[in-house]
Image: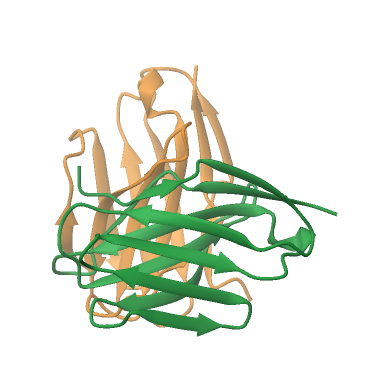
Length: 111
Length: 113
């Protein structure tokens, strides 16, 4: 299949700890994005990394991309209870902004 | 000031019925999308319109028909609803078909009984 696949499916940590989620994909991509979905809500864009980039930062978020391994990771540092959500990666390998999402990593940050 | 809005938020209906979901964006974007999120949270693109023109049409049963009356609106009509259509349907928009960031609506939770 073409979609990204997140790993692990679920992650539970204590507030203050770091959370790392991974995404693997199968075909060469143009871009990869990470989105967050709070329970019962729509997805919110977090960060985009292009295929020629290796690392990007946004606040407490750090995204890496390894095109040779066809994988990306999202690191959330100093997690907060408000970070509790599902995190999705979306891969874009074609035209017309066609993104393929996985089923997400469900992060639970315990206060 | 909701950027992407969908109606209704919840929809419970009987098998065989026909229903519509509406989406509106006030971001001035040219491109809109419909996604289906199943019970396992897997999110799959269904359709995309750019300036009222259909540009993405994934393998979706022809019981699903999108309509874009103008670039701020994208509706989804579903005929002869089936149990497997139960899911959350998300509308999204982006600046244009070449821009990457998509803005999602809150979703419409459809339950077919």
